[in-house]
Each structure stands twice: as structure tokens, then as C-alpha cells.
Length: 483
Ligand code: NAD
Image (cartoon, rainbow, N blue to C red; front, side, top):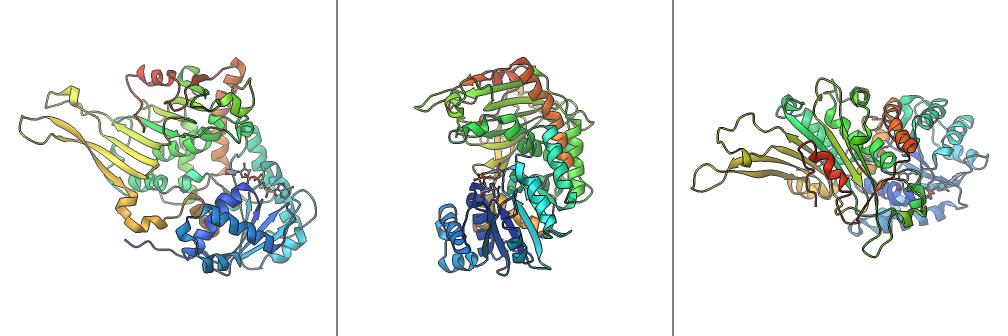
């Protein structure tokens, strides 16, 4: 199978915050990888715009160091690196002042696709949007890209949307949730809507429960003070897990079109039930294995912020009434594994009279470590001895199924940046989606704050607090064992 790389139109991409951590770790290496894949034309221009007093050579040196650190060694080719660096320019800029803006205007080339990546703190979004207009740098076709966190509650998200809407239309705003750029996540849509097999049984009548797990083995060390103001609910559930839930639960859009897809996701968010306190378990990792616990890492001895959350979520619509969605995510867990598991109901009657050995079919969509899908089916255990059933996986690892070409599949950031240039918003969150997600999240967080809710401690390297097991046990279910 040969993967096709279709070059995008040449573009001018300005990275505000172009010297920052995100630019160095993700944006510049991602652009380089698209460049060597032949997708980014050489007459494109990338402009770093940040506070540091650098010249273009200085910025190219910074970008080279980022490529050397964050791009796989076998992709580092001196001629390619030099050609890529030749597309880079830099202007030092004051987001809240006047310096640098006319220099930036002179660098922009009329008639080119132009995009502005706001890789800076959200508090600067308004100032930058305003100056892009004031100085005639943006045009009605320009795109702007913004990163999470998009607000910390409904009020702040609305304020950010309003600030951007003062200068840009919704069709120009690309809110990144990098989970949507993951290959498997998009495959979820392909599996659902390009096959006849699943969709007819994709409903409460046939699906017993859905489990979404995002597990991390790392803690919050190094960024504890930042994380402490956020917590798992804001950092992971409101955005990434919500997006995964939407893609599983949404109705088929009439077309694979940005607004058609986003309309359907929005309907799911609006149909989410409020979550009762008894349906949530919050946790905080303890010290262990020679490392400090969350309290030490957050440098806040009184912290009540959760580094783990498990919850049961209901969706009140015809398709999903009665099928629980169980979500869990946490730091310093046993394994770095993320998956969506859709467990179907057992057949209504066993003609084999072996109910103990009747297992349900499970469709597992793995996001990491190795992206792929598995469907477990029941077959007859081979050999003599009568009719005994056994469970076998129909396994599809993308790396194996797609062979060497898979190695060139762009990572989430690369794909999303190229979608910005192509002007395709399907994999970006619309403003009303983000607000609806916060409208659902806010009362949950406010409830914890009002009650002074304290997360339960859990051992590092474990599966989270014991109470999370009860969340499913009391429904007669179990979390899937994830290693
Ligand atoms: P950073 O602190 O490493 O970099 C900030 C950048 O903004 C620097 O280039 C700095 O020069 C520039 N800047 C700050 N004030 C400025 C001003 N007044 N005028 C002009 N430039 C100014 O931050 P980061 O980690 O790169 O994060 C950038 C944004 O992306 C943040 O909103 C962050 O929440 C978000 N984000 C970051 C990551 C990540 O992995 N780093 C992941 C997801 C989202």
C-alpha cells in the first residue's frame, strides 16, 4: 500500500511564541517532517514571532536544535534540514505593544495562504488578534490556530471566543485538540461510517457499556504548579476524552464536512446527563518508588486537585439511553495505555448452555502505545471434546497492517497544521462545542469546590484509587485490565 502525499498550497505561517516549548517540541519538528514528506512546498515561509531578541540566523539555529532533539535520527538529513531552515524567518515582537508588527507585515506575501499560530498564553490572544487587524496583516481568508487550554470554565471560554470573534469569523478559527489528529481517532469514524457491520448494532440495545481510558505513567513533576490549577477534569476530560466520547456516540453526519461533523458532536455534548457525585471518583497519586507524590510535585501541601478521575456518564437520547460510558484517566498509573473499549451485550440465549464461558464481543480501539483495533469473537475451542467456546481476537495493528508506509503517517500535530493550510476544520473544535463542554463540566467542578471534596490517595504504579473499581462493581461490571 503506497501512501499518497498531496502537497498543500505554499503558505505563510506565523508562529507567535515561536521560541516556546510547544514550537520547539511539536510545531517546528512537525513542519520539518511534512517538508521532507513532500507536503510542505519549499516556497512556503515560516515566521517565528516571539519576545526573544533574535535574528533569522539565530532562529534557524533554534529550529535546527529542535529538529535534532525531537525528530527521529533517520529523518535528519543535512540537505533537507538546510532547505527547510531556508523557509524560516524571525521577527521579535511585542504582543501587547508596538514593536515588530510592521516588520511582520513586510514579511507577509500578498496572495499566499496565511495562518497565525497562537502558541502563547491565552491572555495574549486578544492583543495579537487586535494587532493583526490594526496593522493589516491578516485578511478575511487568514486562519488562526489556538491551543488548549481553551478557558478554564464556561465564562473564560466565552470570553476567549468573544475576543477572537471581534476580529475573526468562526470559519477562520482552528481550535486544536490534538487527540482529533490521531490516526486511530479518525479511524473510529472510518470504522463506524465506512462499514455496514457496526452501525446497525451501535446502540444501547446491543452495546452494554463503553470504557474510555487514558493512562499515563508520568506524574506532574516539572509542571506541577501549572497542573495544580487545572486537574484531570479540565486537562483531559473536558477536551480530549469528551472528543473521543463524541466520536463514539454521535449520529452519522450527512457528509464528512466540518460543520456536519461538529453539529453531530455538539448534539452529543448537549445530551450528556449531569454527573452525580456518587458517579465520580477523584484521586491524587501518593509518594512511592523513590519519588514524591502529587503534593510534593504540585508544591501545594493543601492541594485538592485531582491527578486521576473515573466517572460514569449517561447520554439521554434514543440511541444511548441505558448504556453507561465509563471514563478514567490519571497520572502515575501502572501503564501508559489509552483505549476505547466498546463491549457488546451477550447473545440473548446460549444454545450451548455454557453461560459461564459466554463472553461478550469487545471492540477495542487502541490509541497508544501501539495504535490499532481488536475485535474479540467467540469460536469453538479447537479439538475433540465437544462444543467448548473460546474467545479469540481479530487483531489489526496499524503498524503491521499498513507496513512500512505507516512509518510515514503524520503525527497529530503535523496533520492538523496541514489541515489548517488546506482550510479544513473537520478535526478542530468549534466555539459552541467548547462552550457546551464547559457548560457540562462546570457544575461538576463547582460541586467539588462547594463540598471541599478531597481526592483519594492512590499508589503510584497502581490502577488508581480502589473506589474506582466500585464504580463498576456496583453495576456488575469491571474495568478492562490494561497493561
Ligand atoms: P512557553 O512559555 O514555552 O513559550 C511562550 C512563548 O510566547 C515564547 O516564545 C515567548 O517569547 C512568547 N511570548 C510570551 N509573551 C510574549 C509577548 N508579550 N509578546 C510576544 N511573545 C511573547 O509556552 P509553551 O509551552 O510553548 O505554550 C504555548 C501555548 O501552548 C500555551 O497557551 C500553552 O498552554 C499551550 N500548550 C502548550 C503545550 C506544550 O506542550 N508546551 C501543549 C499544549 C498546549
